[in-house]
Length: 50
Image (cartoon, rainbow, N blue to C red; front, side, top):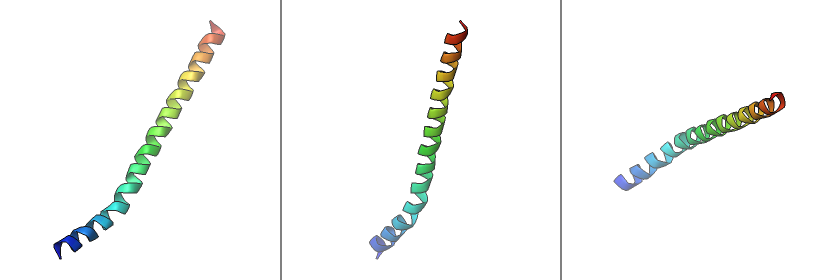
């Protein structure tokens, strides 16, 4: 009986955990891409004007 309840609780928690983890990964990817683009633009500008 306890094992069945534990299994049900696990199944209930999984859908809540996965979207949050996905959101975190998405945010990290966006920040990483933004940083990369920013540094690229900065280096191009510095190269052009120096």
